Length: 118
Image (tube, rainbow, N blue to C red; front, side, top):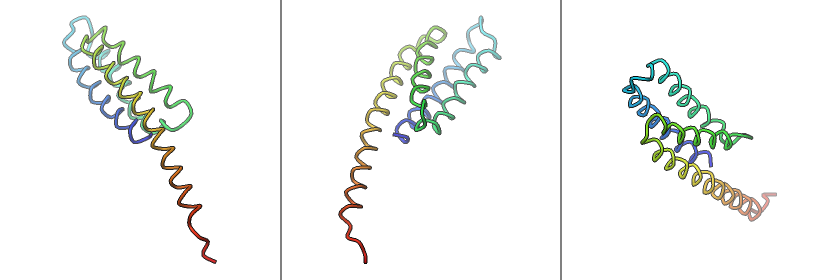
């Protein structure tokens, strides 16, 4: 699960950075505001790469997905991109857990079928 979720988060890192560049063109937003919000979100993406397998990591990932969708109020394209990344996040969590279960099952089978070297 960690690999799939981290890949999604790294993709989001770059999308958030590019959205920050687009948001800078809004005359109502200061550059400091745009880069503070974008920087915090980008930093959160990187931190979540390490926390995704810990308790609450997936929940924080969902909170990031909701924030990404909500950023569409500033950069309208982010409604679409946020929804795409939310779908990718769901797939990463769902299929990542299935892969982890399969790996554990195969490891258990391999350890139980290996004869003891006595």
